[in-house]
Image (cartoon, rainbow, N blue to C red; front, side, top):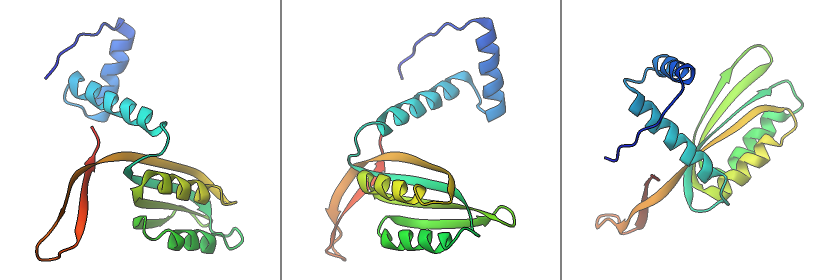
Length: 154
């Protein structure tokens, strides 16, 4: 494991220690590693879409909006090959939160997320993307079909 030293002024160090305590990290090193992973993933997600990913698309919508729920369901069905699971929660009398777990081509997932979040009536849409890298490509003797295993990048 590589080590490096950073210097922080006292006020920033106190704020960081408060963040560590709030989030439940056991030490500064774990918190810094997590921040670095987040920064790397954020930087990677700004790159042109490539490869595969897993993602969580979450959004809030008013279910009273004219046929919006049906349009959203139709979009999900049109992209069923990307959808792993979906969860629907009622926030109040008017609003619902949906969270859709996606897996597939990064370009296709971004396109689907853009289409869904552009629907009139969708609010607070957010796509959290995690890049994947190929772990192995093989066929099982009992199935005969080739397939690829992925794992989170980095």
